[in-house]
Picture 1 (cartoon, one colour):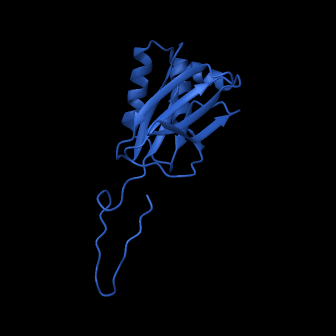
Picture 2 (cartoon, rainbow, N blue to C red):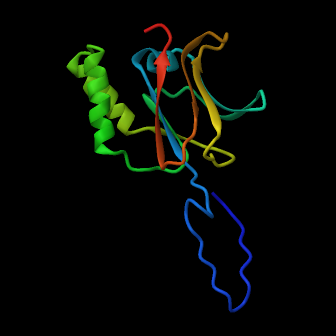
Picture 3 (cartoon, one colour):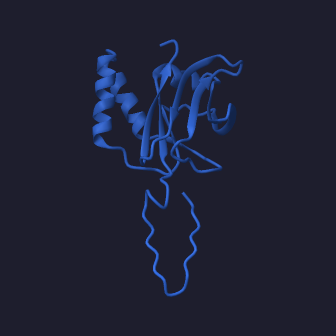
Length: 158
């Protein structure tokens, strides 16, 4: 995240990432089949930052059918995460063709534009809902100080 430091002439300054500068995490929002289908049916994805009971809209997307969305800078996806996703889907008894399609979609997320960077400790709520407000999938989380946060939006009516 951006930070300002005063540097005096002839004096060295050591800046420690994680101590002096805070991480600006990226968030990968993975949607299930119901939420992905709903996006093709006029539903919208909204992501809010919640603080002191207020919900500030961070990002929104409609009109794009995508299985995953990325908030923040692009980061590499750990192969172990991909293996975890496949295990999750197999445990849910998803057919092999669906597993391959979902994992491929999750590995190529649609980037969402943020006006302000994310910070560790931010509380986020993400929701896919129809125009009337009927939610299809939802997730809530507090951001840790890591590079990439993997979040599965749970389908409310799978």
